[in-house]
Image 1 (cartoon, one colour):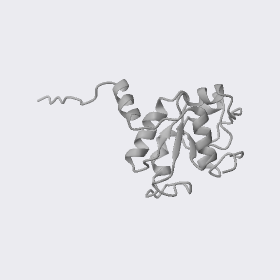
Image 2 (cartoon, one colour; image 1 turned 45 degrees about the vertical axis):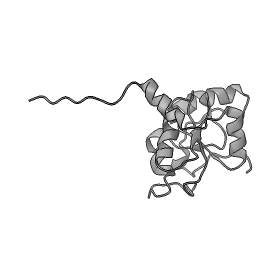
Image 3 (tube, rainbow, N blue to C red; image 1 turned 180 degrees about the vertical axis):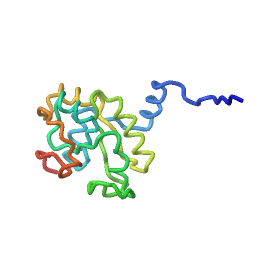
Image 4 (cartoon, rainbow, N blue to C red; image 1 turned 30 degrees about the vertical axis):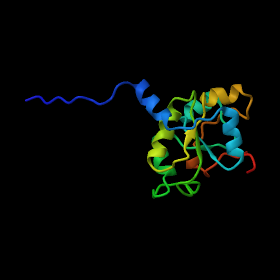
Length: 152
């Protein structure tokens, strides 16, 4: 006997639309200002993509596949930066699509101030904000942060 189920999923576009409906998305300049005032700027791009595109010096590097575990304050695998559920997290991907889904996932974990950067790293770089050639190193595997974070 074959059992079929109907998916409640419309399309990736609807999923993205629903994710963004709960976010207060930031322009690259607004994200930079939030970061300067204490938000965590989290780059979720894979090492190969950062190596090819470049990086934001000082951004916290957490690849997407471990994001929730590293930022959930209740997780045994959390980073020291996961200080509490009121932490403002600004997620950065390449073009601002994956970051919206990731920020919504963080909100679902209770990080209610999670959001993302409109246009991602490409828009950040185009806005003339600090960037450097990427080295592809995942910071959480080394010392938690790439040198050069702007002062709080």
